[in-house]
Length: 569
Image 1 (cartoon, rainbow, N blue to C red):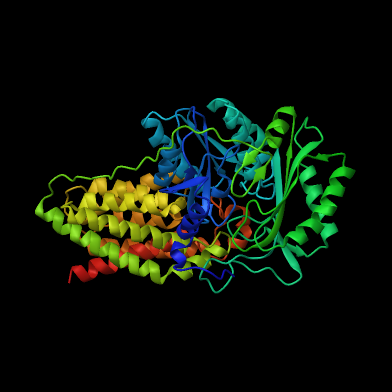
Image 2: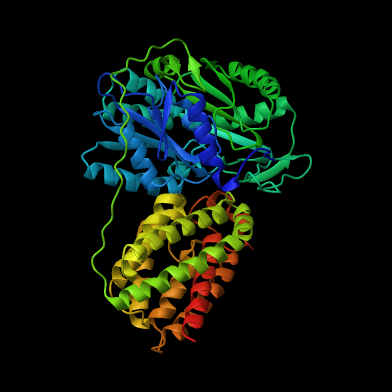
């Protein structure tokens, strides 16, 4: 378990603030993460790793000369929002473009993609390097579907070294993608990790076993196997990774033997003794191997082995110096220009004058959102428990964070005189900007789309159906999920269809029938096998458990339905 926190909901933010205080000579905090202290003397490509918190020293622990120019830091195990990614990129950009690098998770892909679109509209060159090193998460012929785990570190290191040499954006990206193509990782967990404030770990491993094929967001291993000796584990790890040696690769490898948070360094050294011998026996030469904690998962008891096959170009970059709070190699002197701190300008949002009827409806929008916030808070533990079966256990906390931000944003809009549609759109923007993760993107974009359709209209069944139709279309467009993929779409689509086909002109009756359909569909999702998201690698484990996104969607529709019933009496 974790032992020290103030408010568990603020743990990630508090840790980042503490880090920036401790290393104030090297980094400075900005909204959404941290960047190097001061700008480079001349424009250079800004290498910006990012993802959820809970993985220290990934991601902000590697900010510094020879490695990252900044890091985008989301909530625990939750991808940062597009807003956060934009904030960090603006602070780190020095005129030569930025490259985001992150693991292959749906929330990261969506949020960093949206951030890139915004930055490009501002004239900033932006590229992506997505890491897919986890050999357990998909077969070799589907490598593009693999997760990014500890191999993130190697990709960040080599891109950072290339950028420090003065390489242009396209060249830094080429190095990153080449490194990813040559990187393979396998990991295992001996015990699950725990969120701050949680009484139980996210998953349990049976006594005398380990979970082979772990994820770094608290996901359990793909299957439980008997606990081996250190020598047996080293043999298994090395055999699995060498079996995926890239075609044409040589015998020199960068090696990471990574602790996930609770395995002692001495244990890693015992394991390394056997890994090193097995690699030498196979004809491979470890080049400056790293043994320690590089990409963790809170207090998870686990280890992973990463190999990156080097050529002359990659070896030069792997051995290049770097100087960061958590990783130091050789000696490097950072050449800085005049230090500047760009203070973000306060955003002011104006709203078109709203009709009295729309402002009255806005009051109901805000009141309904408050009811939803209360219900989601009450269901946080249940939603998290559902998510731990095949996911990372953060769904409840992410939904609370998102809906709370939505309420705050909607209240501000209402006080500024906004109508119902603008209040709903503001709620969506607040949700997306603060929640991060896949659900943050989808709910945020969906609510904005619904608000744009609602506009100044009255709240009748017809306009409600059109707004929900727009919400559903935007969510499906962004997420790419279909009915049967075991996502929130499995509850959303029946709800949308029922509302559109309602024969009654009463919004209360139509919404109630649609909410019943959503609840039924959410419960029925238990029989499905996930084809999208973090649950996909653990597909079989999720059978018998409903999808957490579908459950939370059905809960929200029921709460709104209950509110409509009460408001109509």
